[in-house]
Image: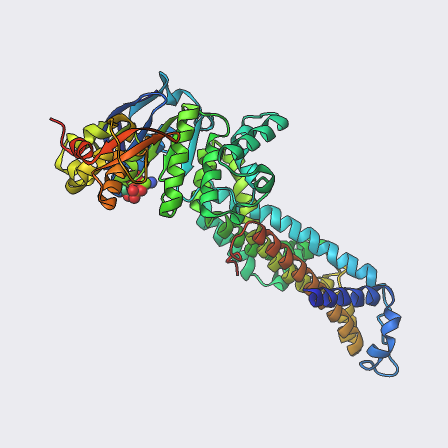
Length: 250
Length: 311
Ligand SMILES: Nc1ncnc2c1ncn2[C@@H]1O[C@H](COP(=O)(O)OP(=O)(O)OP(=O)(O)O)[C@@H](O)[C@H]1O
Ligand SMILES: [Mg+2]
């Protein structure tokens, strides 16, 4: 545990240094650039690009979460049960659509910029969160739900006080999955002029500068690992608190 | 008082509770027994509208339960189930406070009530208040489950196999606690079990069910002596009848004058325990004490007399 914490802290500090003082890594990245090429990305501030990247992902996932959790709640209520199959289909379609195709379709409608990327990430994030919320809400211990009814909670009280809190670790696992996918997928957004770390990678590819590609990739990778790890930790904490077995999601 | 009148429950044409009528007097414990699938749980769950009857009426203190919104009705009726059903993400105190909170009690009143109930179940509030359910033993979880059911001071308590998951020792203790609490609070209790022993021990009255029908609803002694059908007789077990009868009677009611040797028997022990003790120690009589004072003797003959079928 102690060691794990140290490693996490070290990785986090590397990331911060890379974003604030990329010149510190001049020597390292120079190994991957030709002598005539700049080793550190010079067409924009890495910190700003990263913040923009994270903001796009955060907004998209927040929207996915609201819609997917909302849908899952609706179809697990008695009155919404008949929509269960159809909502599953819709979420599945969202997932099978390649993000590039969504971008290509969205650009003529929404124009270049952040919007098409947001839409693609949003659609892409729906399914894991929807599926997990569904799993979470339909596999609650029956005697606990029975007790919630028996003590006289209304449907809404049962949902807010018992069902959602107990399903939370499983829902979080879905959000974690969607977030990590979105972090990586967002890089494609820079092809339609969204400001994401894809910009750094593409600049590297265009000029044949491996150092740029590496920088972009490294930042996305570290972000993904840290966020994955933090959310997984939160899930473990929530699960342990209620003495449940590790939630059976993914 | 709970009046169940000609109640029926069918699922897709299958009748699982078949025209049952019974009246449960206030401040008594009625125990529903029967084999698995006989409709005990369904019958009980219709009292707090967790199941809506297909036909028939249930009244509580004269009021038709359909005239009250289901969730409000349930807040007035305690409900304890097998495996306790505690909310795993809430502390012991939060679990006990569930219904008072739903009813909008003041915070200070809720806290006082939680501590009072923990005390009633012999759990130290300081030690248990902030524990999570999974940090309790099975017996403790079960007690918290009953404490939660009693938290808002309901007149009626429904219990579905509340002791089913407990080992025999803890189970016996839980039964004693329940009897003590029932005497103290005067709650009307309806308890489901498939253990005839438990039914006879706890029930002021026993309802025997089979295949959705109520075969007999009577006091334990009546059920033992005059079973309404062969099925009821089977459930009691013919070879156990004398001992079940003895278990209903206290030693104190059959004390004779005289002296006897050996270890004394308490006046509030059952005749069954006394009989067993006498046989085991090879005595024909034993001294009886009440609160440590000798009050006479209990004889093997008296036990045998009481075990015989009443004429
Ligand atoms: N929701 C339901 N839908 C269909 N059938 C049901 C439903 N609930 C109960 N039943 C059926 O009704 C019958 C009585 O069930 P119930 O749970 O009341 O029995 P029980 O006497 O409590 O049994 P046990 O001792 O096993 O708990 C059973 O055959 C059961 O399968
Ligand atoms: Mg049952």
